[in-house]
Structure formats: structure tokens, C-alpha cells
Image (cartoon, rainbow, N blue to C red; front, side, top):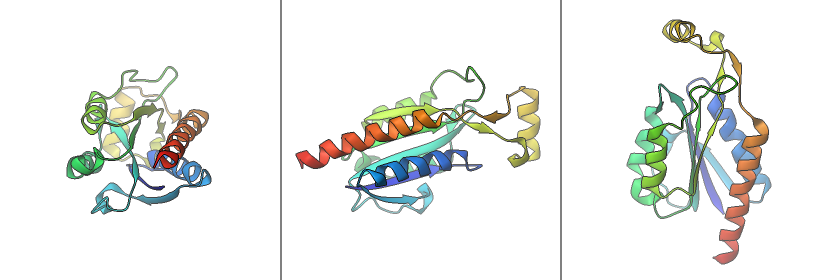
Length: 167
């Protein structure tokens, strides 16, 4: 099955999650194409889509939101999975799912949405971002759970495998 994995990432942490998803889907025998959301002009030829975005202040990045809006009708006709990345700390903060992502998953008929922990590396932030994270006392570090990412990716691969058999 030909799958598009497209991820909006500001500092690279969310793109790394997308890279793991793409690699595991490819290892499962699927043909994978990875592109930034703003580079995708059409969904022709893709049988499934995984769309991810970093979350800042409870919102997906504009590139991911615009992609979903631009391709909403097409996305609703194929298997779609969404993921968000952003909570930091242990326990993660914020703990709630981004309402925007949940609404988007519902609107697109996504087969699933998962929120993964994020990474906060002050050296990658601009002055304003460092100031805000310091004021909020946001915990620094890498809070991504790679086992969780791999397990979710394998579940998608299994679902796509069943889809391929039924086709």
C-alpha cells in the first residue's frame, strides 16, 4: 500500500517521530513517501495518510492545519491516522489532548489519533520561546516514548495489512 507520512515540525522532534512511523511502515512492506505538509499538492496515488503535527499552546502548526483543510474531502475517503507531539514532563503537561486535533480526527474520520510526548531543548528555541518556557517553568528534556511510537506504528501497519488483504 502506498502511504504518505506528512509531518509539521518546528524544531525537528515531531519530524523524528514521523521518521520512525515511516520506517516501521516501510519495514512492514508498505511503499512510503514522506513530505512536509506544505509540499503536498494532491493525494492522488496515496492509499493511506499519516499526518502529524507539533502542538504549541494547544494548537497544531499552521502547515498541518492547512494540509487537513486543503485535502479534507480526499482524506475522508482513505485510511488516515493523526498524531500530535508536544507534552513535556513526567507526568506530561498538558495532560489533555489538543481539542483541535480531536475535532480534526472526527471531521476526517481518522482511524486514530495519538499524542506523544515532546522534546524541549532550549538551545533550539528562539529568544521568545526560551522566555516563555522559562516563565512557565516547562521541563527540559526529551519526553518521547519510542516504544509507544513503535507500538502505534506497528498497529497502523497491521491495520493496513488487513486493508490490503480485503482489497
